[in-house]
Image (cartoon, rainbow, N blue to C red):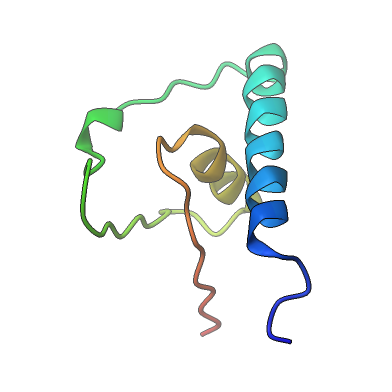
Length: 75
């Protein structure tokens, strides 16, 4: 079995995280998001964070208008 969580449950968990994070981030930080209009409405997209910290990953997942799938590259 390649997945330990079935895709519908994984989707529910991701959406629950996004709702929780979108309600908590404005209370804890002064985050400004710019460029959401650059996201493709249809077709593939490569989204690259420019920092190696964990906060980039959380912010990208939380505020992106589409569901993301991550690829981790260890150099």
